[in-house]
Amino acid sequence: MLLLLLTGPGGSALPAGIDFRDLLADLYPMLGAQSEADLVFWDQAELYRLFDESAKRLAAIAGLFVERDNSLASAAGTRTYTLPARHVSTIQVTLGAVVLRAATVGELEARDTAWRTGSGTPTRWYADGEGLAAIALYKVPTGVAILHIIEHEFPTTIAAATPTLSAPSPVGDYFTLRALGEARGRESDGAMPEVAAHCRERARLYEEMFKAYWGAAQ
Image (cartoon, rainbow, N blue to C red; front, top):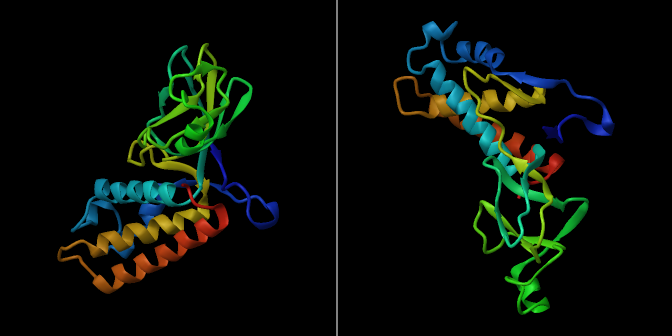
């Protein structure tokens, strides 16, 4: 995975790697426990689920997680291609060694009356009209070549079996705040609405900072 989170201001290196087992150890006392065994109103699986939801939320709103995916290939006569499962938004598409230009349906309609069916060497890609999980090529390819897609994507699922994430450790503070806010905001005897509101507001500040620094994902 390529991450746009590997350097700080001025290009200085940031420590990479979040271990959610460490975040849980910090989170337990905030939930009135010393370990998983002492949790009363939550369990470890729920806390991992909250971490995972936060990772997906962060990936959807800020441009932190970027990958170059090479799993697709063009096929003769095929216009539309299903994007990888963890795709959020497309940054660049290359077919073979040729970088394709992003286009809109309106632009293609104005350019070519047969834009949906005309075949040849693709020069553009577009997504509007294809749903959220696909892109299409103009022109329709006549041969086979690898599609290299640079994309914003969701990280792999965060769970007890996969408890690490390739991201600078300071981002871990965001996950802790979000998990604490959602846990204390859940309706139960462990609810603390004021704590939940405070954590959620601080997490939103982190999100705005991430978007300002690394850009939006879409």
